Image 1 (cartoon, rainbow, N blue to C red):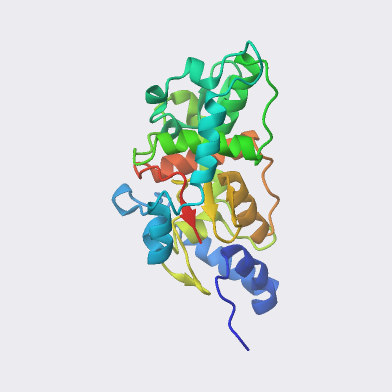
Image 2: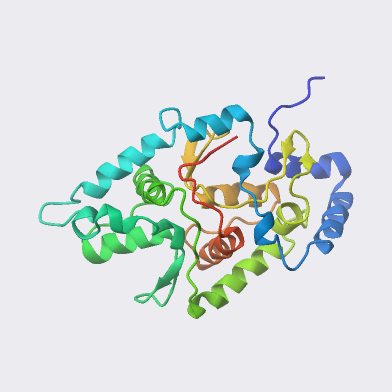
Length: 274
């Protein structure tokens, strides 16, 4: 029998009950979860998933002429400069490109109007509704991915710098709890793999630390550009847990914690991953 190639963490998690039995899989996940350090990964030991990729994939990301995500960056630059309707300013009419460098590295951030944290995609849609009289762009739609990729690309190589804003502390704590709490039918937690087992092999895959340094990114498995929320949905489905609602307070809270957990790694948008 041929061995499967490129098996993902999600597919392996789905297969665990078939290979081990549900009770055994849950027992193993509980044992692993109990070994997770409450301190997470120290800053000096944080590594991007880029470091664990094959040389060919790293070369694809590093070469803008070969990186498929640059197609979305180009579309985003055009959308940023285009007026959504006559008489309405374009994004570039208020936000000069040099001033936008580093912005993506600071999200999620606090929004005064809603009184809650918002991620970068949420900020784009708030700007559209408040200042351009435009409708929100759908999550995971081409235009929102393109604008997010363009803004992320402007911050490429800059360190992630989550805001030191005490108003974000409750949401960040909620995100950490989501990351560390076993969930779903298999009883896995995000931390059980990405804090406690990173660098080890799971089938054909190397377990990464799971830092969101390059989103939206082009995933070879998807043959498409996708958001961090899409990746989280894949992981949660593999854990047989309920996916988070896109743009929900829970999703933003988890993103907020993940950005804090990854700092000060550099922004890679648009990254390429297997």
